[in-house]
Image 1 (spheres, rainbow, N blue to C red):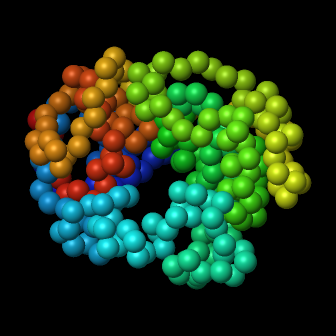
Image 2 (cartoon, rainbow, N blue to C red):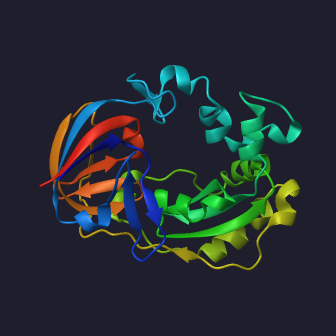
Length: 264
């Protein structure tokens, strides 16, 4: 059976283990059902996630012109502390920026390769943690807008990491941490503007991924460089497909690429 579609972030269900889906325009694939099966991938063309034209992807699934024009790729997406909608200041599209920035946001700790601090909209919990391959996570503060979450994250970066080592995460070379102790230890460094939003009493969320075998020396697959690939699917973690030969495919890095997927 062969499927064709443009790659976008895998959709997930918070189950034990996590259920993963590739969603195309007219179809979807439950990837958990394909564990231990041989999959063949072929790159077909580009399709920008915004303009849908066959133009080389620049970043985040967008062509270069869209990346520098649309609000979904503005600087505040990656740097929440740059958010200005709460001040009524527009960067690219104030209506869109208000819609996203002026919603409750969570500052959290997640343990994927190490303990890191991050920011996400409240509605993206626990999806954001799943996407990062975190096996445990906990909320620190819940604030009313993206700006407050951003300045809190910046303040905590001096005392805890803010990046995931993808190789360590995929190799599962991780240890359990007491995130409640981490949360309490970091409370004193939360900015004054966000102190009132500190979450005193909550528990860790634990996440289990559908992985039969972890890679020992993960090597990354990009379909613009390797137009054809065949491998046996052994696991899914974060936004990565893990194959028997230690090849790993970050679906987020391949967003905006149209591929054929054949189940052999």
